Image 1 (cartoon, one colour):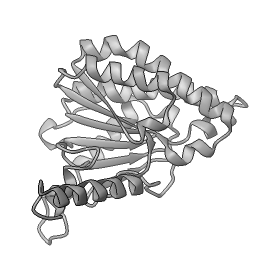
Image 2 (cartoon, rainbow, N blue to C red):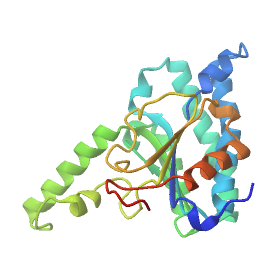
Image 3 (tube, rainbow, N blue to C red):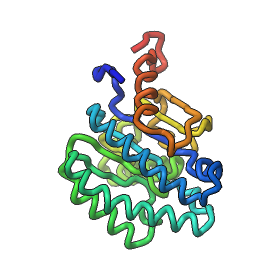
Length: 238
C-alpha cells in the first residue's frame, strides 16, 4: 500500500483488544489468543519502523487486568518475558528503543529486572521508541503526575502547575502526544489509556480482533488517518 510518509502520524497508540474472543471462537484457551497476538505486535512494530514513525505505544496490560484469573495473568507475564528475550536482537538490529510505562513495581521482581535490562540495552537506539504499557492506569498516571509536580512546586523546582510542568511528570515526558489511537475488536471506549495525552488524538476503531490485525490492517488504519482533517478545537483544519 502506497502511503505518503509526510502525512503519517508521529506517534501511534494501540489498544490491543480481542485476544480472548479470537481464542474462544476457535475453542482454544485464552492464552492461545495472547500467543497469536504476538504476531500482530511484530507486524505493527515492523511496519512502524519501516515507515519511520518515531513513536509507538502498545497497551499490553492494565492495572484492572490483575483481576483476571491467576492462570491467565501468569500466562500473560510469562509470554511477555519470552517476547522480550526473543525480540531483543531484532530491536537492536532495527534501532528500536524499548520503554515500559506504568506501575512497573507491581510486576514480579524477575520481570522487572528483565524489563530494566532490555531498556538499558536499547537506550541508545533512536529510530523508534516502543512504549509498552504494563500495569497501566491513565487515572493513576494523572494522579502520580499531579503529586510529582506539586512536590516540585513545594521544593521550588517549578514556579507553578501548568500543562508544561505537568507534562514533564507523565510517563511519556518528552514525547509527542499520540496522533492516532487504534482500537481493535470494535470496542468504543478508551479503557483508561493515556487519558491526558489523547485530548486531540484521532481515533480509529476496527472490528478486527487483535491476532488478525496484521500489516495490511495497520496500513489501512494509517491511510484513513492521513485523510482526516485535524482541527485541535479550532475551525481551521490541519
